[in-house]
Image (cartoon, rainbow, N blue to C red; front, side):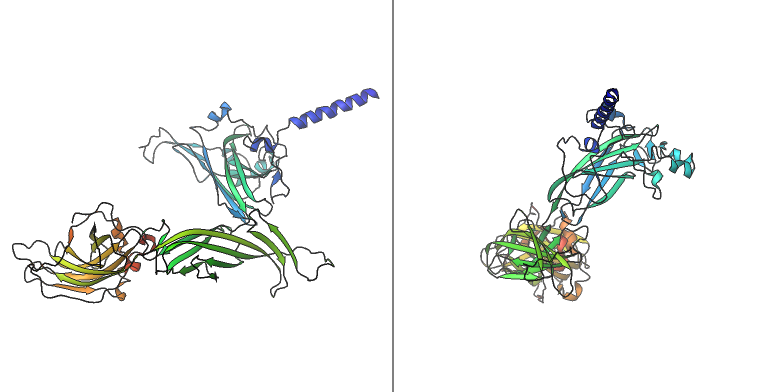
Length: 560
């Protein structure tokens, strides 16, 4: 009897030793993190990392193991793991993992790896290739034999591979690990998956991935590991872009007085979690104008004073959710049940309510906050071409036709000017000149422009200072430069804007022509025919939002 007891104790001790020595998912997938991660809620579709790991089928190598050098023919496989974090609690966060093979290697449509022999940087595309067909076993067996052999078509925890269409040509095993749990799948050279964050605590977490490839003798070989951080938050991730028609530098947070600023709110919600939510935007622009509540993500505001201002935005989302069972309590005076969970910030609260409203149901309230400081200054608001005059030249002086443009502006005084010339469609650039100017009192200046030859041109004149710029445009017909020459100018009207919408290409044009700001001289012979007309400021059309903020004026001015 005593011998039997001793034998039983020995067996139990041996089993305990084996269990203690068994490799677990946490040991393999923790990427060197020794402290275990405890979790309170299970992620749907994931398993505990305390499960045993099949080390015989999926060997585990430490970081400094020399076998890593030979795990892939032709070099080292790099892996890139990214996510669309941050994620609002309750939404999905998506991860994308991509394998980057060594040079001159690629994956074909059948999942095979193509090796280019004698590959060099200048090697032609069509050259001798070697195909590593590691799915050859598929063609050498029937469906029954291939699918019934579960000894190697299984994950490290013993679960069989899912038999989706094309599963046999997915030669990589991806093992993801986060929050004390793991997820396993098969794929090709890339994989994408999403995780619902309802059961993940708020804060920053690490997602790790280990990738194995099919090896010989019905086993798998580790080829790469990677990790990335992701954030789960109870605050709506938002970003606000600000734009203004005459603003010269969109990134300096300096804007112009008496000109509307457009505020465009972007909510980061890649999984469309807030699609069915009621969203409102509460603005305080910090200038004493009060609070504004908008239902649109885009609004505008005009500052009437100069100075520094702090704007604040609160975004509220009312999210419909399934109602939880409520146990009636006699002490409650109303049928409304409310549960509040406050974040550490104190100013943000997540409120889940069961409300007696017309549409019924329950809602969660989420909030997002944005604050920014901006500076409002005086700026150039408008530019007008009030006169165009052809300069009469003698026969000996005649070179290129010359035209004087008299320009005025409203707002602050300009410090530089650009003139851009293009074809009559305002699409093909023929030259641009930029120079500094000094205007001490009234914004009134004359700009002389030389043209290569007679013809019809589209001309754009831009005045700017450190923070703003404005543009005026005209269509002009230039004749020869002799004494009999005349200049006929036709100003652009609103109906021409649809044709002349791409003048922004001038910003990229690098060749400058010379022109000279002048004062009118009594001894100068001028053509007495002067043309005046209406001029419209068309900068908003010629320089759309995507290019309007790019400074037209070059850092190195042309020679005056």
